[in-house]
Every structure is written in structure tokens, then in C-alpha cells.
Length: 113
Image (tube, rainbow, N blue to C red; front, side, top):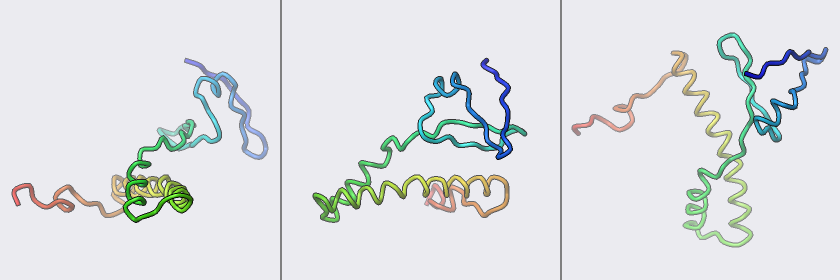
């Protein structure tokens, strides 16, 4: 296990050791969260295109093409990550009992129906 002690600046900033940076393949951003009384820092992976085909199919079905298709695709793609993050936030709140949640039956009805 790699382990290093690093200092924190007066502005609460840290420098990620180069070995960690390279091994994790950190690019432009990291995300951090609290887990078990520790700060976890991990690389943010750019959108790998999970929704690209669905977005394109929808835009093409709307009759878009050329530059208009490209611009609308870029706009829609930028909205994917914030939407997924909102869903995850809602799921965490529901799991903690701080928000309403829906069961499988609530969404899809009883299995025998």
C-alpha cells in the first residue's frame, strides 16, 4: 500500500504526490467525499459515452442533422452528468431515510397484474 504524509496549506490545499497522481491516471478533476471518518479522493472519469447512442437516436428522430444535430447533441450531453448526480443525491437521501423513496411495486405495479 502506498502511503504518504502531506501538508495542508493555510488555504486548506494539498498537493497530490506524483506517484498517486500517475498511478490513478488523474486528469483534470478529482472528486472527494467523506467515508468512515476519512476523506476519499478519486479521479473523475470523463463521460465514457454511455448515453451517446440514445441521445443521438432521439435527436435524429426529431429530424435534426448537420450542425444543428451536433450543437443539440453537445447541449444534451452536458446535462447527463448533473442529472445522474442529482439522482445519486436523491438515492443517498432516500437510503438515509431523509427523503421519500419508491419501491419496485410503486414504479411498475404488482408482478401479477
